[in-house]
Length: 201
Image 1 (cartoon, helix red, strand yellow):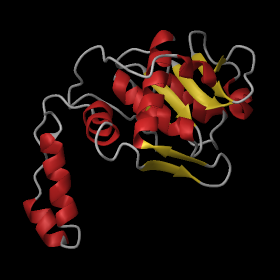
Image 2 (cartoon, one colour; image 1 turned 135 degrees about the vertical axis):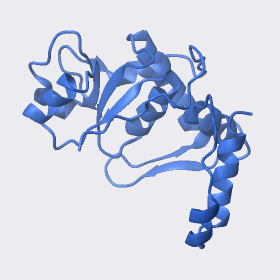
Image 3 (cartoon, helix red, strand yellow; image 1 turned 180 degrees about the vertical axis):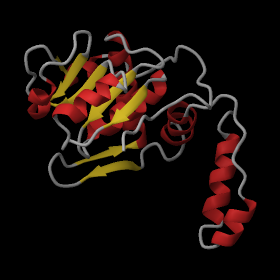
Image 4 (cartoon, one colour; image 1 turned 135 degrees about the horizontal axis):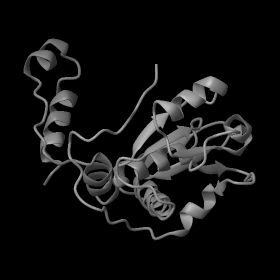
């Protein structure tokens, strides 16, 4: 299977985690032509395997939640289908401006499954910093908390805005993305060299 080389590399590092010298000397990057971490590893190995009911994500504090691998897999499938219905295609850029909440991880996995590129953004950003993400990063989709919606006022036309919480005018409610099917079919294979994250530092 496509994840066997990835699994072998991971297992080697886990076995040598107390021996940096050996890890550094003997580790070899897996040679992969096609690989989608969300589909080939998270879904196939974890969510659909014996660990499916195990805890995958635990959020403490505001928005406290516990989610299993199987639950997060199905939720990210629904979000991926919802994003696809909004027009997200392979290679599209999504600006993701959320704290450590469940939707952050649902969107991350959904974007991987779609082949979209995520631009992670701290919730501290505003003004020119956000504009830069749209100008240089060419983001066409935004997922953010409704409370941060005013920061995106004046965005160029054609940017689809998705809000967590009370939905402002002109934004799509994140909850609607969960109305799709719990299964997902990719539009094709993901090349191991395809971009996934676009960081601004």
